[in-house]
Length: 142
Image (cartoon, rainbow, N blue to C red; front, side, top):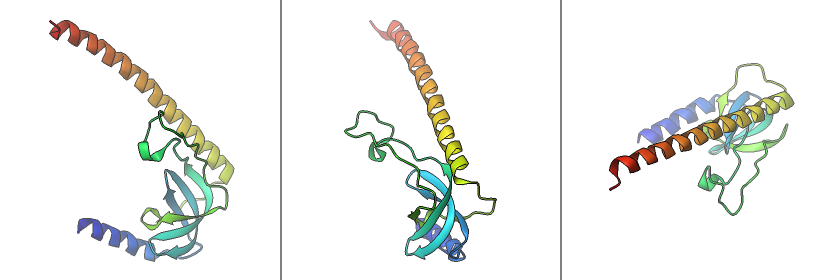
């Protein structure tokens, strides 16, 4: 019931949107700023004008795994490309719309930096866990 109410409230918020309105919306794992083209049941057709978050790479069905049959390279939606985005993810955008290419550059740079930080964290975590593994072996192995 709560989920239905949340869906209804997001529908009500989206009913005030009109074609031509600037919006921000999620598409798969990317986030885009664009222009609302059309509202259709459960979806919004959005013309992409800028990129907020670059899509994640890899197989989305088995997230963050590299041992998959196909590691998908996912491109950001192109400038002025129209995509059917989930209506629940569409919100009015009220700030200045950045130019597409600089926004794309920023989004991919942030995605790379985040992945590099996660890789550093993963390496440090593995090192810490191996130290703990040795301590556990010394403490509990008989």
